Amino acid sequence: IDWCLVSRCGKNGKCHDGRDSYNCECDPGYKVDIVDSSWQTCANIDECDTLGGYGACSVGAGRCVDGLLGYKCDCVTGYENVKNSVGLDSCAPVLCAALPRKENASSIIEGQKLSYPEMTYFFCHAGYSLDGTVTGQTLFEMSCGADGVLTGTQNECKPVLCPVAPAAPHAKVVGANPVHFG
Image (cartoon, rainbow, N blue to C red; front, side, top):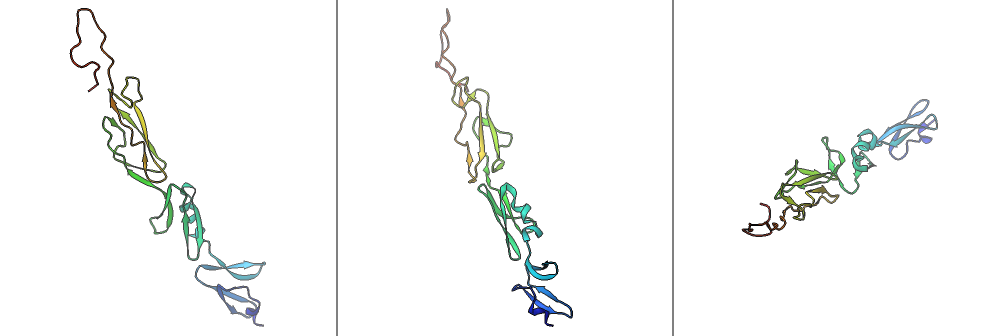
């Protein structure tokens, strides 16, 4: 009996006839699998599983797409496909430019880069606020957008405008009135 006549190796492997059965020799990217309890066939190897693509692509809810002898990552907005330490696809957050130096304000990570969706706070120095008033906000946020652009960079800390000095008996205001801090 020529067992290869009934083999299920398929188009992705070669059949080798044996005495009581057949064996499949599968093409690269395929493996021997058993179907219907005893029949060998050549099945595609899921490289998303065997090469760790499911984990590498899942960062930020990315998706692994299996291919022949490899996989590709389909990354969501805010993440990009980059090669990992062993040269395989992975999803990584988009990296924004370094945080700018803001005059009259500071951040604990000024000058460092943020990656999507990270954010940080900047604090206005004493005597400054976002609108230049004594009661104005002194805190603003910068964040890394999905497009790799920093948001919140337009904020600036303005010197506080001191209120007009009140009149006092037997006194006179000297200098500009009102006065700006600094």
